[in-house]
Length: 232
Image 1 (tube, rainbow, N blue to C red):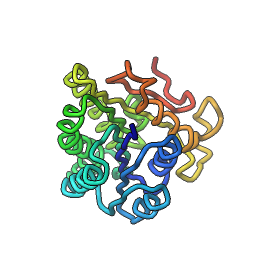
Image 2 (image 1 turned 60 degrees about the vertical axis):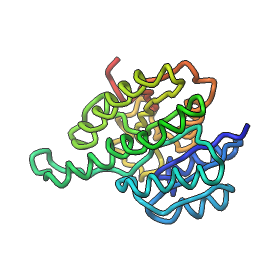
Image 3 (image 1 turned 120 degrees about the horizontal axis):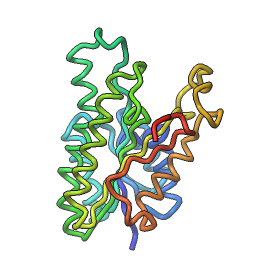
């Protein structure tokens, strides 16, 4: 049976790397990005693509509908997004926080709303949210990200508990500093492994969590950060 995965933020970086990894393992992929890159990559990988935003529910629904019209099933989803606004904590506006809420939490809530009935009907599925290490160790450099990604961790645990008996799993991947962004020595110096992670390393972790090999893993936040988080 051919498996089908949806990926958002799939035009470049970690999302594109995950799409390539899954396609290389035989998955069919349906890709979304705001830049048009997802449509181009989907053609290369024999999938389908949509240009749109994770902050627009209509675009998320269109991605689901296109995958279902093409293959009739959805086995996995990888929810990857851009970065919310940054700045000094008291200077962040309500609009900044609302943008972050749309990017980090509501996109997951909305897509899960569309995916869950499909996965229930077919007997299961797996959802992976790519978030960030700051979800478990808040950092003043990333105030909105730190706050809302912690909230996403709570949502993922609640969702995982609610649907575990239906064989629908949800997990979070918490990358550290990854080479999809320009390397900065001030950040690199904080990483015990002494280097940025690679998008390929994130992509392989995604593929594992979507696979049957991770069939007993749900509600978890897996750090893929080179040891940068200090908490245990």
